[in-house]
Length: 207
Image (cartoon, rainbow, N blue to C red; front, side, top):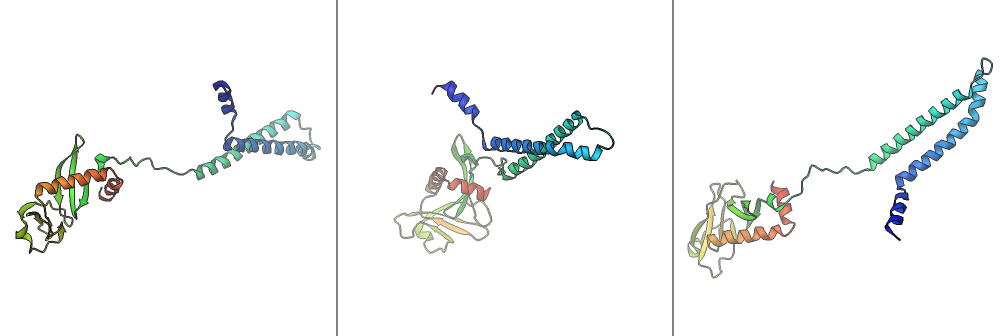
């Protein structure tokens, strides 16, 4: 089948809506035929004793009635079609990776900015009061007896370095790794989440 033949066959295809209007037109035509049949007797019965109704007047009446009927049926059909259409909210913009600028990782809230597709200005925040945490370095042995709210890692691991933060609201947390490694691991986790739907969930939750 060549393109020309395929093209005009596609044009001849009727949608479900087109078929509906064809059916409505046929019904209206049948109604018009019935009215045409009874109208002459009706007008003769009403006006025969006074004056004769000209054919053009009856034709004008029938045409007007047909147009009004078609318009009425079209309005009903259009209203039904519109009520079946699902309303789509176009105001929502698609969430991209650059919208992802805050999340909770290792029980700590983190904020950052994107610059040249890289994470910059990474800041740890208290998950309770959003105060910016000051990550401090200490030997693991010095913190081993401290009762932190959150432990990231194990007290029994082989690392001798630890990172801790104590917020003014009383929240405290510790990582049994160096502060530089805390930032590196957090950035890796953020990048990992951008490759999954997790970052979209975070944007919707924290934005």
